[in-house]
Amino acid sequence: MTASLYIHVPFCAGVCDYCDFYSIPVGAGDRRMDAYIDRLLAGAECLLRDSGLRRIPTAYIGGGTPSVLGAARFKRLLKGLGGLMAALDEGPREFTVEANPESADRAFLEACREGGVNRLSLGVQSFHEASRRAVHRVGGAALLPERLKGAREIFGSAFSADIISGLPLQGESFLLRDLERLLEYEPGHVSLYSLTVEPGTPLAESSRAAARAAGALPEGAAPLPGADEADRLWLCGRGFLEKAGYEQYEVSNFARPGKRSAHTIRYWRMENWLALGPAASATIISDSAPAGGGRRYTVLPDLEAWLKGPPDAPPLIEESPDAETLMKETFLMGFRYIEGPDPALFERRFGVTIENAIPETLARWRERGLAGAGRAALNREGLLLLNPFLLDVFEELETSAPLRQTPIQADPKACGNTG
Ligand code: SF4
Image (tube, rainbow, N blue to C red; front, side):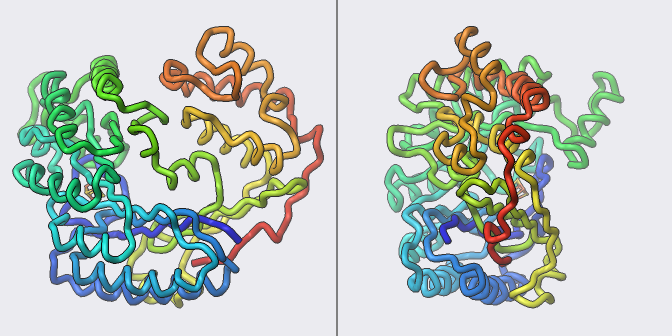
């Protein structure tokens, strides 16, 4: 079996107002992080043994904030994982770790490099202290130059940085200055995210309070740009990055040549991945027709239950999405990517080509100059209209029902085991 591996580290140094990830605030001495590593390594051993996994093209440790574990714990984690992966036919050619500046010190970065990590993703977000404070972003801006310098020295251009547009008090000039300062360190990859106000987050609550106050902002709240202004800001950022030689290859991601994220491309193309850790989610789909059925599991976002549970049977929610659901998801994810869903994999899985599954939508969007002529994919202007495009796709799938014309059965062998 071939599948990528995602590991979720559910700890952070604090809680940012806009965050809706599963994460627990911890201090450096919190013993739950030691227990987490013991349990994770035991779970990884079971996963590799029980799933028949032989090749891991890419691996990714995300969170949360993996770097909050600190250099010594991370060394132990990587050593354990390295020992397990050494027994595979093929280990990861791309191995990424997420880090946040407040904990990505030199010792941590060196531990990553020595432990086989060859790509770093650094949560920079903004150099503008007032914007950071307005959303209670963990860590201060003062550390950023030193941490970016360290990333550059240890990973060369094999590092990515996240920047958020549309932060409170940001405006165009601060966003462009953020990008300018970031590019001084020559990251190979930049993710430019537009701030999203997720329901249930402290940011959603403060925005509502601000709206209620009708202009008189309550203490602690800061003005967010409206939707049109947020779009305009993001487009300014995109223009800046493209001018600097970064190609947009996904809705929010930009890369220098050869520096795209192989791991996230596998998500967008719905290639199989397994997952470990609280709140981590995995998807496994059979790669040959007639198949189309698949298995998804999401480990419950509950650290205590996960620590207490047996390593070969963590508490999780399992689903068995049918072929129609998976085809929709393949389009939903695949058209985010500038090269679209993988046409050969699509045909193998669903027994129909992309061109035959949604011919009318593709023809209409090509006519409008928003999709490529030679491949089933949106171009960079089309990506800005991803949601209306997907509505057209789903409408066509409902009426043409390509799978009902190509009988497909679920293949139980498609499903791997749980980690
Ligand atoms: S550092 Fe990231 S994961 Fe942690 S609270 Fe902030 S946004 Fe959430």
